Length: 139
Length: 139
Image: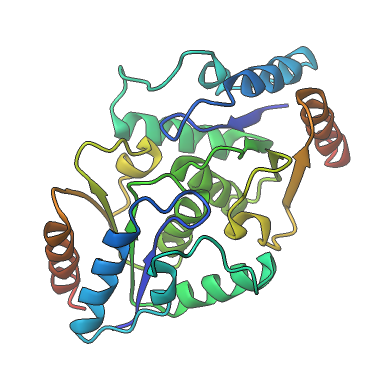
């Protein structure tokens, strides 16, 4: 399946090893991740692209995906926007955050039937939650 | 007019003096700000309300507002979500950030005709940009 993986870029890269592990696990399960390069260690911007180019590319990827999985341990305007955009497009969305991190109530309190919000203890648990989400949604 | 002011809560309160100054200026101009209490110094959560209560209240306030003004210097999933939600409801949106802060390209690159993104030098400039935005939109 085509899975849009959303993670903080400008907001901070403290969790990039988790991003990379989730993306690698999804790819090893046969999924296509158009945003895989955003999980690479060391990425802090996509300087070669204008803001409009990034927006239009990412919005098109969300419209084309089967589901969106967001790692939301580190605050990000872009990821918050993408979660709402994907739900508006009717896509199933999973938000994962590390236990003990504080998450906006606009995400954790959102009753949208296509949204799941889960906390994880370690990276392996995050990967298992992502796999469960996709199986449950038939993806 | 009824203006929804959006700012980071869980994501960090480093800019709360700016939030408070913008809200006070809008109120002094006669606008109603349902989220005014979120700009108060020292707020880091709304512990008395469940996540669902916060979500449903804030979403209802956005649906009822004439415009949304967001301070986006500090990353926030909730504010990113609210920007998209307001645009989806057809509301004019102004995003203000301090010069030199990095903003997600999902916000700065969004070509939506009802979205304006502006940087400011000091708090007085932010207040002036907010006033200009409302006048330009006939609010």
